[in-house]
Image (tube, rainbow, N blue to C red; front, top):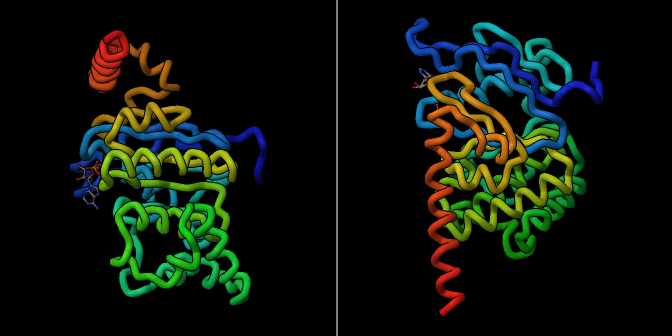
Length: 264
Ligand SMILES: Nc1ncnc2c1ncn2[C@@H]1O[C@H](COP(=O)(O)OP(=O)(O)OP(=O)(O)O)[C@@H](O)[C@H]1O
């Protein structure tokens, strides 16, 4: 059953431990991601961000609680079918090194038995969507691409079977700041244009503030805070205030510098 009113992804008191219960990776997380929303998950190393994504597409299963996608409990859906409906983007692109760009992008459509012609047309359409010239890029191998180009191909591959949901695990983390910024903005535009629902893990709070509609802050397996950038900026939670201190200070320093420069 799907309903326009239900969130696209709903986590309800989700828990997941490792090491026979010693490591509480996710500790009672409840969170709703609305249709069309871009939600960023921020938090320190080991706070449970990747575990939450892996639970979403059932690479692992929760010990307790429930996750629903479009109103359906993920445990009632075949994991392979579930994953085909969800695009995944990884930090290093996650491309298969022995396959060319076209084959990397066409993997899921081929598995879904699309015709050769439809797959080829989709590959070129996707390359255009992520702003890579199809003629120049479709026959290259991953090692013949820059880091930013690899990530663009990674995004194209994730979108190949027209998923409604995209999960991104530090997708821009390994890129230089300019490329990172450009790719982030391009992805945000794609997200809006294709009406996606996106969950984006990032270590970079500034990136989260600039790209996301809402931000969820994880700390030691728990959801410490969630809200729009403005709501988070008003949080009295010490960890959240700490997180926001650096971008605030940088914005103030830049503002002061540029004002001084302009007045000179
Ligand atoms: N398969 C696993 N087996 C054992 N422990 C695991 C496993 N996966 C994750 N963990 C542990 O669960 C906790 C949360 O890990 P997770 O990868 O979700 O954190 P993260 O917030 O994504 O970290 P990072 O930002 O460093 O990627 C960590 O303590 C991690 O060591």
